[in-house]
Image (cartoon, rainbow, N blue to C red):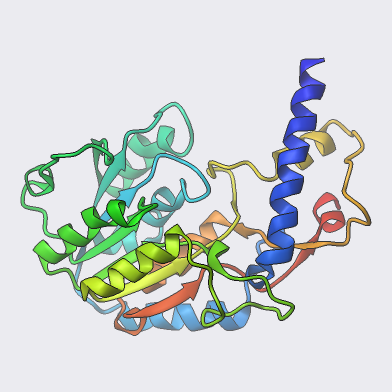
Length: 291
């Protein structure tokens, strides 16, 4: 029936995604208990402590309309450092407000946090962003939208005009080349793909930058539902088909952990011109996910 067909298609998608993840991105680790590497977490949280005494900053977020990073802006705004210590404006690319996390923007971000959400088609040409921002000059710009060098010109131009102290780009750990050595570290070899091209364009702009490389984010407000197949079958007490021996290691990081790592780098001098993998170095197998 239609439900079985949908489950088969979803299983195929999840299998391909997780196989790719397990063999290419083991550096990020992770498990369903939201375990974060103590070494990496403590290092980033120490950076946050160093920046805690700074005056209130203005943060501009360029937010995409979905995908693996679709919940980053939402979760970042809910972090204490941002919610209580920053004035936030979100340039939200045209999206479906009936879908999560966008359906929670009004109650959680605008009403509770006080963030201002500006709806705009970021792909449109001829937009006057200075006029759109109405005098808002961000100290920090976080680009969670750009997929190409052309896209990146928006965040770069805004940051240059405002003389921002930091431009953060939510990149991707998908740029790392496959390796037999784990975990993969920020200085390891990368492919020449679109996220890497954006990083290089930002470096060439001369702006103080921070590159954040997450991969495979899960959680209740995440756009991509990597675990729904497993949870749905387990809830209905159905067998969960797994590929081969089911001992392949995969890497999953909870959306709130990713947000806390990113928040630590905001307006933090120690994060300037640095690259951070935003994930854990703990692994979980297919079998472990099911258990």
